[in-house]
Structure formats: structure tokens, C-alpha cells
Image (cartoon, rainbow, N blue to C red):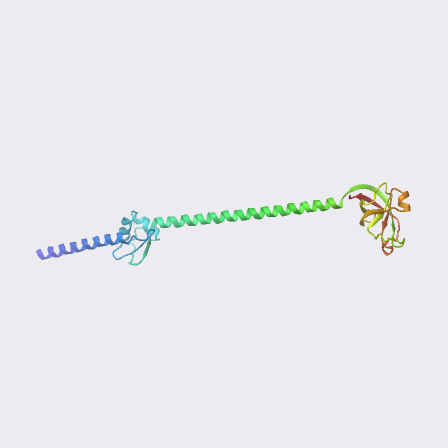
Length: 222
């Protein structure tokens, strides 16, 4: 009987020494801040107690079944719950920053498109202004070739009554058939000088219309 009690006493003392060593080992394993490396004798319980957290929180942080008594082995890395929370917060912050950058980029692209559209509209308005002037009504139009008359004035001019259109006046002439011409008053001729509602348009003989005389609406550009 004494022999049996002695064996039981020795076994109890041995187990007590093992649990004490395990507890000390678990405390020494907490060396990596957000993670711990499992050492011989460590358990989820000892690691949780050493770091002031619950066993279930530690199991959840490592994807283990809560209360499942999962085994861990020396050398294995265990993540503490705080590290998981920090990782999720960092991921959320990065996602928020990315979404903000995307929104800013979209806004800048929209502003650029709006600016380009406005510039195009302004350009069109300028062009319209440049080709539209003050209407002077309907005029009788005849044509002549300055070269045939021995003149070197070229074909960019038009002869007009200078009291109506002084020299240098730029005109937009739209013929009855829709043809548009731009001419600068640089001369006066017999017909135009005696008729304030007539213009003689300079044009090469080969290009003068067969009808010879027509009508046109005239606008002053400048």
C-alpha cells in the first residue's frame, strides 16, 4: 500500500513540474509582438493567459474551431487577435485610399472633358463670328478679269461704289446659287461707281459664270 502511494506521489510531483515548465515556456515564447512562436509544452490556454486574451479569441484569430482543443506544435507561428485587427484596419485604409484616388481621377477626367468641350464651343463661336458679318442686303453682281484690263491687282478684290464700301472693306458675298466668296474692296469700276447696289467681282475669265450677271446677299466682315 505504501508503495502504491509513493508511486502516485512521485507521478503528481512530476506532472506539477511539467505544467510549471510549460507555463514558463509559454511566457518566454511571446517575443514577436503580434505573433508568437510555439515552443515545446505551449498550449492555446498557456499562450492566451500569457498575453491576457481569451482562448476563444486566440482560436478565432488563427482560424481554429473554438473549443476544439486544436493541437499546436513547436516552431508553429500563432497570430494574436490584435495583429488580425490591425491587418484588417490596414486593408480597409488602403481600400479607402484607392477608392478616393479613383474618385479624384474620375473627377479630373470629367473636368478635362468639360474644358475641352467648352474650348470647342468657344472655337466654333469664334469661327462663326469670323464668317458672319453685318448684312448689307441684295446686290447686283457682275464679273471682270483685271488681267484682261492690264491690271495686276489679282483676283482677291472687288470693285464697288466707294461711298458705300470704302477701300479695304472685307465682304462676304453669297451668290444666288449658294456659292460663297470673300473679297476685299480695292477698286471701283464704271458700273459699280454709278450703281451703289452693284459689285464687280474679280475673277479669271475662264472661271466667270456663263450667266455673266447675277444677284447676291452681301455682308460686311470688317
